[in-house]
Amino acid sequence: MATFVPLVPRSTASYGVRLPHSKHHSMPIRVCLAGATGWAGSELARAIARQPDVVVVSAVSRKHGGECLSEVLDEPLLDCPVYTSAAEALADVPCDVFVEYTKPDIARSNILEALESGAHVVIGTSGLTDDDFADIDVMARGQNRGVLACGNFALTVVLLQKFAETAARLIPQWEIVDYATDSKVDAPSGTARELASRLSKVRAPEPTVPIDQTIGPRDTRGTTLSGSQVHSIRLPGFVISAEIIFGMPDQTLTIRHDSGSSARPYVDGALIAVRQVSRLVGVHRGLDAVLDL
Ligand SMILES: NC(=O)c1ccc[n+]([C@@H]2O[C@H](COP(=O)([O-])OP(=O)(O)OC[C@H]3O[C@@H](n4cnc5c(N)ncnc54)[C@H](OP(=O)(O)O)[C@@H]3O)[C@@H](O)[C@H]2O)c1
Image (spheres, rainbow, N blue to C red):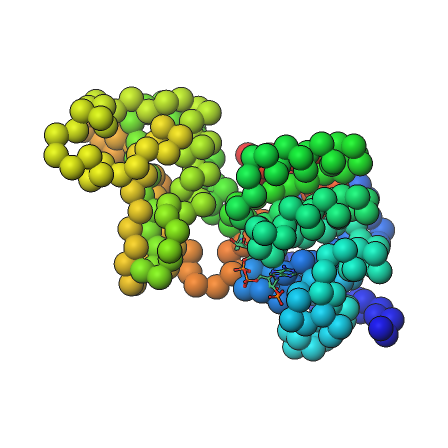
C-alpha cells in the first residue's frame, strides 16, 4: 500500500466549542476513525479535516479497505488509508485516539484492540452492554488509557440531561417522551434510556397513583425504565426528539431537544471527547466527564 502523509489542514476554522486539551500537544492528535465512511463517522471526519490540532491518520470500513479516505469522502484534506479492520489500521499506523463509530457487533473487539495498541478510545457506537464496559475498563486501567463513551454527543442533549438532573433534585414527578420517525424500529431511543438511567441516580420518581394501580389499559401509562415512565411516539413528520416533563401542583416544566436529519449535531461533542480523552484513565460514560457543567 502507498505511504500516506496526512496533509496539514489549510483551514483553522473551528467547529463549535473548543476546550484546551490537558496534555500540550505540539503535534496534532492522531486519530484512527473506525466507521469513517458511515453517516456519523463521515461527518466527524469532514469536521476533523478542518481542525488544526486533530488529524485522521487512518480509517476503517470493510467496503472501502485499500482506498484513500480523501477519495471516498471527496475531501482532499483526509489523505489517509482506509483499512478493512481496526486491527490492520492499528498495526500499520500509530494513533493517539481511536474513535469507534461502527456497529455494536464489532465495537467491543475494536476497542480492546485499540487499547492494547496503546491508544485512548472515544466510543460513539451504541449498544455496548454494562459487561462490555466492565471488561473495557479493566483493559483501559491496565494500559493506563482513557475511554470516553457517549450515547449522544449532541451538546444540546448533554445539557438536557444535566438540566433534567438538576430539576429532578427539586421535583419528584416527571415523565419522558421520545419522538422519532415512523421507520425507527427500536424503542425507546438510546437518549431516553440514558436519561432515565441518569435520573434513577438522582431519585426515584413519586407518582401520585402508582402505575400498577392504573385503572384501564396499563400500557397507556408507557413503560417503566429505571423508574421513569417513558412514552415513545413513532410517526412520519418527526426526526428525533427527546422531552422530559416535570410536574408540580399547578405548574409544569418541559425540557425538550430536537435534532434535524444530519449527523452535524454529534460533531462538537465528539471533537471535545477526542481532545479530552487523554485526561482520563479507565471507562467514563457521558461527555460531562470532561465538561465542567
Ligand atoms: N454517540 C452518538 O452521538 C451517535 C450519533 C450517531 C450514531 N451513533 C451510533 O454510531 C454507530 C454508527 O452509526 P451510523 O449511523 O454512522 O452507521 P452507518 O452509517 O451504518 O456507518 C457504520 C460505519 O461503520 C463501518 N462498519 C460497520 N461494520 C463494520 C465492521 N464489521 N468492520 C469495519 N467497519 C464496519 C461502515 O463501513 P462498511 O459498511 O464499509 O464496513 C461504516 O463506515 C451506531 O451504533 C449509532 O447508533 C452514535
